[in-house]
Structures are given as C-alpha cells and as structure tokens.
Image 1 (cartoon, rainbow, N blue to C red):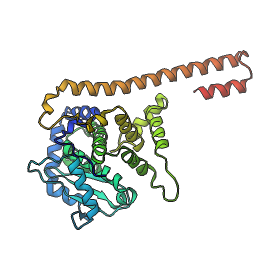
Image 2: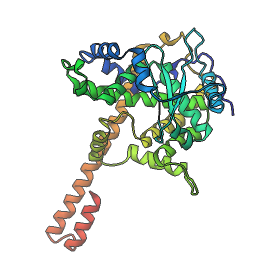
Image 3: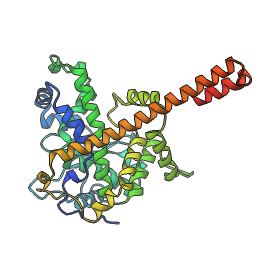
Image 4: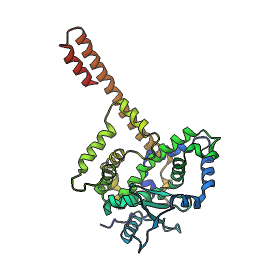
Length: 344
C-alpha cells in the first residue's frame, strides 16, 4: 500500500517531548557549542562521508530499484520539502548486523545495512527508511553525527576535547540520542502508515525472523509494556545503568513508547489531517513544549514513586511476616520465610 502524503507536515508534529527537553538540556551544558564546533571542524562534511561510506552502494532507479521505490514512497508520505534542499542519498552497506543511520552535517545521507534488508519485510523496511528521513527532517543529524564520532573513536581518543569536562557531555549527549529515537519512530509510523508493521520491526530487531516458526506481535507488546512499566525501584535503577552509555533505547522500550503514542489517538489525528504545517511551528508557544516535556517526565516520576511505594509496602509486609514467624505467631519458620521472600 502506497502511503498517503501528509502535505506540508512539520517535524514538530511527531517530535517527542522528551527529545526536545533532552536537547535543550544538552545545549545548556557549558562548552557544548565548543565541542560541536571542534568535532565538526576536524571531520567536516567530506570526512564524515569517508568515515561512513568506505564501502557502500548508492541506491537509485537501477540499483536496488525496489528499495529505491520504497524510499520515494517515504519521501512522498512525509512530504520532503521542495525548497532546493537535495534529497538525501541512500546507501546500502554489506554487514549482517541489522542497522541503519542518517548522518552528515550540511548534506546528510542515509546508510542501511544488508542485514536489515534480509531481516525485514518491505513494509518494515519502509518504516526504517521513514525513521531515518524523520531524523533528517527534524534536524537531528548534526548532533547524532557528533555522537557517533564520539562513540566510534572514544572520548579519550579525541585530544581536541581535552579541555572540556567530558563525562557529563557524553552522558547528556547519549541521553538525547536515545530520546531522539522516540521522535524518529513516530516519523517511521507516519511514513509507512502501517502501525503493526512498524511495531513488528522492533520484534524482529530484538529476536529475528520467524523462519520456520511463529512470532507473536501481541505477546511482544505485552512483554514490552511489562518491561517499560513493571519491576521494582531497584529494577528502575538497573535499567538506567544498563542504558546510560547506550546510543539506542532497548527495542522493547521503543515498541512500548510507540504503541502508547498510537493508542493515545495522536497517530490517527495526524492521519486525519490534524497536524502542524511548516511555517506554523512558531504558532506553538515554547511553554507548550515545556509543559509536554514536564508532563512526560512527571508521568515517569509518578510511576517511579508508585514503584517506591509498592516496594516499601512489600518490605513492610515481609518484615511483619518475619516478625510473626520469629515470635511463633505466624506458623512454621520455613513457611513464613517463603512467604516473606515472595513478597519482596
């Protein structure tokens, strides 16, 4: 199915509030602008192309024409701006690892791996292409390219940054990088206009193709929701530690977040024509962006607070059980200990 064009859609229509909040935090770090200028100045546009295109094939009408057609569908669906800005080039690189990226400074381009094409169906490939186009239209690529260079070389291998406090910069950069994925995932769904194919992409990226077996998207979404909202306070701490130095959120987290956005009705409203048009972005007050971001993070804080309350309640119950057992009022010691352990 060819997606319908979303005429003149502005990227703010799909931007995640946490993306904007994290980027504003990043920009507020002392020395941030200096880091960007130094790295961009050293590598430049041609250096970035050499770094990421050492061995790749340019897609076109006669080079992977089916992929090229999918790409044109995505550009039409997201209404690539006809303002003289060149259409980003699309390259395929030979690697079994499923991955894709949009990089560059003045003239960004997209690279997709052969492993991605082998893993995903055409509709799922369309989601990945729309995701990357979304990054470019949202203006992510300069900062994401800087993040990839830092990850590729390592902070210690970039002597040009020696005078800057690097760890806060690195952590803040990666926090924003992960949140920018949430915006691009929304663009991916709008570009493919097939919610189940969009969500199935995460299942396959996490666990591979069915091959001669069966994979169940609904079961995966239940798993994703459980990971995203379940667990104890300590589980939340472990999740934060596990992702602090990752450039991407876990696939389960992204699936849960995108499914929640679709279920909220926001996707349907955009498909019905209720979205911000280009040129009208300034009509949305900055305070609305700040409110949305605050609501998002407040919601996360409320969930964390609920987890804390649950953990305290379980600990109190376990303590009471253990106390009753020790005083001989709660039955056998073995039975009470088992009950207490289960509560915690």
